[in-house]
Image (cartoon, rainbow, N blue to C red; front, side):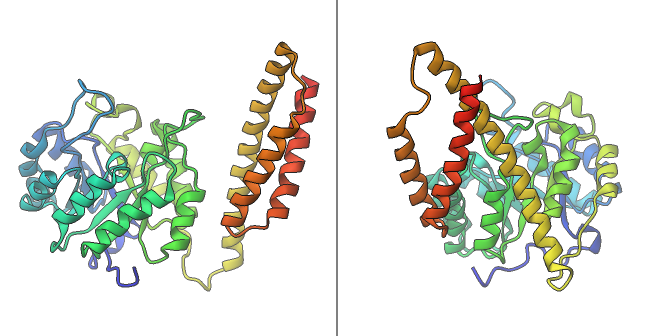
Amino acid sequence: MNDLQPLFPSLPATDTPLFIAGPCSAETEEQTLATARALADAGVGIFRAGLWKPRTRPGGFEGVGAEGLPWLRRVQRETGMRTATEVATREHVAAALDGGVDLLWIGARTTGDPFAMQEIADALAGHDVPVLVKNPASPDLELWIGALQRLYNAGVRRLGAIHRGFSSLDRGDYRNPPLWALPIELRRRMPRLPLLCDPSHIAGRRELVAPLAQQALDLGFDGLVVEAHRAPDQAWSDSEQQLAPAALCDLRRALVVRRTDTTAEPLATLRERIDRTDDELVALIARRMAIAREIGTLKRARGLAVLQPRRYEELLARRAAQAEERGMSAAFMRRLLQVIHEESIRQQMEE
């Protein structure tokens, strides 16, 4: 993907890094315009609003559909902002293009469906419109890259990615845990691809949006997609993660944009990334130890031995093979797992 083009070559300096904001859903014309005007006053250059809303379960608000396209036209005329909406089918693509939407994004559920992605790619062939692809709900980097490649093969050159976190049974503090290692690996493998972060969907709660946004910029993301609503508590979808326009202004003012030129303290930048990765690693190991303690309790209740040699050997062999596939030494992985396993056994025996 060496011939990718800028998403918007002539964006004003105030949108560097790229900043996209707007409500989860366009609910009414009045709500859409009121939110857009407030965000335009805050200096936002790209207004996002969902028209088609694929919900996890039926019965919720599923969007106004094409009825909202004239509302986005009014946003363009009256505020000067560009507009963006999500598409999930070829019909959505056709309607959005006919309606003059400036930017399209593809949601996590759609990214995870190669059939849907190919349908959208075919519908976009021959059209010069920027397209952003959210990561799939599952932590599957190849699926994410495959979705991007389908669009690229269809001729889309104004292409970018959005990191919105991943579904997990163990969510911790977040609606969709970020698993930063995956977008970082995407950046390594596709260094020319613009990479944005959606801290709203990662957070699930508005008080977590700002720190996640700063963390994304610290990790070198090229921009942010933030959900904002004129009255967040009254929003028809995802009310808990949306910011009021005033809160969005505060967030933008507080963000620190790090220097990105490659000659500016490269070692310090890399060390910062290492530190953040190590923080994640410690948290993951702590979670593993907590599970090990649960296993220890269960083994005692059932009269099972703490050490299960066959299971341990299978684990070592499987993880060593995975390490080699990812460019690491199998011997290193075995040593690392031996240390982790020893601590797991110790914690199980102390319970």
